[in-house]
Every structure is written in structure tokens, then in C-alpha cells.
Image (cartoon, rainbow, N blue to C red):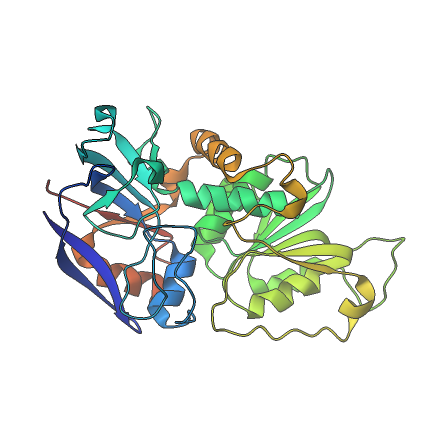
Length: 343
């Protein structure tokens, strides 16, 4: 069967190519894609040529074999319908709506172990944003917000907005978000932020001077850096108070972060903590598994109005337009979904 597949072929260059998808093997199914979500943070790194080309694409996702070297198929949030099953696969899979960590592609083969059945009542849009919700939950779990804390979230793209939504369910003292785009700041307030600021106003909002006084806590207790911009990490550190924590959820790829660690940071005992969704925090592994967190993500999808994130639904044939929008017009595009017509 002919399939249309998205390839990243060079810096700021994408192509939709046709390739043949065979009949499923005995232990496989064939899936016809309905929609797939662009992960703007990671995929823009690949699109812009800022991802390390010698790094494995993702060792935890079977469909993403090989490295990040061009040309490559990429993406990991596809929802579709099972249209054929192998001889050894339960026919109950046939016609099921499923989620799969798979690149942007109209048809593909997968083993049932790689698929997640989409619950009844869950929309295609919501299911395609399942990895975004799971990532947001991972960031919040790693941050461990406490009652009454002042929390700041830098970056209100899709994962930042959903992190804000999860954080807003906690009895925090104050939840402040920071973003360069006014549209995203407005969305942030609708997802539960108490206040949303442009970066230029973030530092002045928090009283964090050069004098360290543990007995008079100032600044944020907990900050999240989710912008993908290394320069924002300096801002996150600057608003974080004595003995506070900065959770770094951004992946910068080949970009370097320059930090001033010689001033207030040195005496403030600020903790910088990396957070990444592929694994569970070692302190949580006694009770939490990736399966348990994934099931939690499904439940949060029922609570969150993720449709508000989607600003564009484009056919895969307009992939070039989609990435140009995300790259150069962040004020216009928040979350883009690819759609797939035909059979």
C-alpha cells in the first residue's frame, strides 16, 4: 500500500514522499493515520538543524530508529485506525482507534504492543496530544510543588500551557507564567495562571536582590524553564529565591546556555534539575512506572480542554507551511495537527 511520509531533509527543509507499506506480518497490524500532532519544541530543533545529528532519534520508541541525521522521518504523536491485522493478532484490534508513538505518516505497520487503544469519548485531537499531557505531568512531578509556593513557568507553548493547567490544580500561593507572545499569555490565564508576563517584566515582578536572607524568603520557590531558548534559563534562575528549584524541561539540542553562576546563584543554594519524559525520577521509581504515568495522562485528557491549543489543522501535503508557521510566526501558531484524508 502506498503511504505518504514526512521527511526532514535538511535545515528548514521538509518533503512528503511516497513509500510502500506492505501487508502486516503475522505479529503486526496496519494503521491508517487520522491525525498527528507536531511537537513544536523537539521538531523545530530538527527542522532548524539545531539537533545533534549523531544522537539516536529516540531509543525508547521503536519507530524512531537511527539517528537525527538528515534525511529522517520524525514525530511521535499519531492517532489512527487499524485497517488490517496479521494472522497471529487478535481480530479485536480491527477498526480500533489507536494512539502510537510514530512519525508523521499516512499508513504504517506496528506491533500491538506499540499501540494504545483510545478510550471511548476521547477525541482525535485529545488523543494526539497525549504525549504533551504526559510530558506536562512529568515536569510537575519532578518539580514537586508544595502548598503555598510561588511558582513561575517560562514558556507557554503547548507543553507549557498544559503544565500550567496541571499546576493550577495545586493550592499554590501564586502561579505566574512568562512568554513573549501575547496570545499565549492570554491562553495561559485561561488555563489557570494567576498572572502572565512578558520576559521583560518577569525579573521586576519578583523581589530577589543580591542580599541573601534565608529567614525572609523572596522570589519564586519553584521555576520551570520550558521555552526551548537557552537565554530563558538565566531569567528562570534570576527570579528563583534562596533554596529554590529550577526545573529544566527544555531540550536545547546543539544550542548552548550561558549562565551567570558567580553572583547571587552561588550563595542562594538554587537547585537546577533536569526533567525528561522518557524516564521516571529515581525518587519516584519505587511506586511509579511509565505505564502508571501514561494511564494518568489519559485521565487528565478527560479534564483538560486541549482543543483550545489547536490553532491549525493542515493536511500532510502542507507540511512546509506548518513548520514555517511555527518557525517564524509563533504568535499565529500554538499547536498544529496534520490531518490525513483518503483510505
